[in-house]
Image (cartoon, rainbow, N blue to C red; front, top):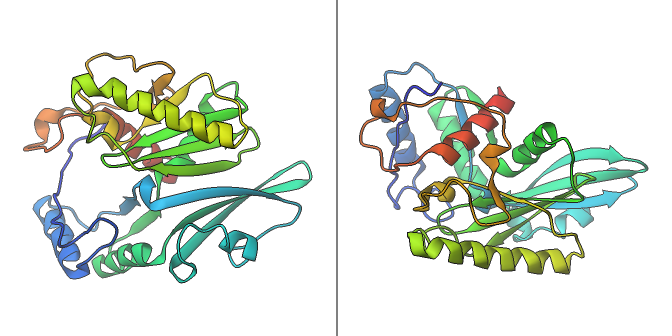
Length: 273
């Protein structure tokens, strides 16, 4: 059960669009919040937005590491500002290498903040890879192509996974903020489906029967219908995680809807703990 949600607005002068600009202020804001909530050394699980990461997969007959030129050359960021984490699995005679890229300057800001907080750290992660683990655990039949879209306020990240567990991602420059009015929501999904069809065509892949959507932006849509436009389905319908939340105990919340947010946070916490 979720007992309480506490939202802490962070000024733009503390966290900018892409980087932490004032580590000292962020540390102070966080510690003050912990004191107000009367918590004693709470463990921190830092879940960072999908838009700050890029995933590319490689098939190779030998193991590749972070320093391999094949891996480094595929980074969407400048070489000196690239941080990459490798995850591996084996399929028949090939290794599937999944490389998770992010900006070094971006990640270093969060690491330094956690060090200053001096609290127990569960980990630093991002939703995409966890969601495909959940999909493969909960879905009886895995299709040749599976797609999950993480909808955020100003961007959307498309994750495409094959049966071999090759995951690739692509960030789109639009999210829910421009389409959150009821009469514009269908326009968002129409634009999204066109983007996905172009990506699928370029990669010569099959279009899936359903496309799963989740993310903080999904809760922002003024959408009264339970069903989303075809072929979109809320990822929370696939996830077996059940929880209850009484929002009357949480005061002065900025956001009014939490279904997708809580499902996403709790499913990742459930895997990490």
